[in-house]
Image (cartoon, rainbow, N blue to C red; front, side):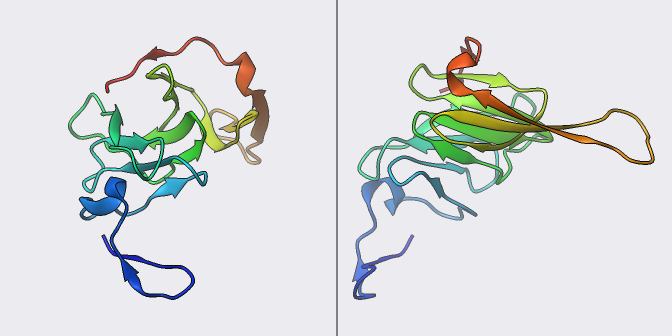
Length: 144
């Protein structure tokens, strides 16, 4: 991992959270915390800050599944995909839930999800829903 000073462009040592990363395809942040799939897309990692050690949040149950680059982060919440399934994780309580719909975006107040009409149809409809974060159900235990 290489890092540079944004003002000067000069090389600087990478923050501790990033220093040992190799082969990561994408990092996601809300300006404070960050999250990323592992280099081989076999797990999801999260850190509350650039100075903290990353923690395992999710690991797919099947070895053939993968965590994709659909990760988004908003404070304690993460949304991500695992082989076509959408998830929401709460890093504060170390829990996650499969959503049954596609997570699109999240901030500290709302989760935006998308679901398409089922079956073959000439004009499929995409339903977009805004879900207040405070109305989310209790989440299942995380892997990490």
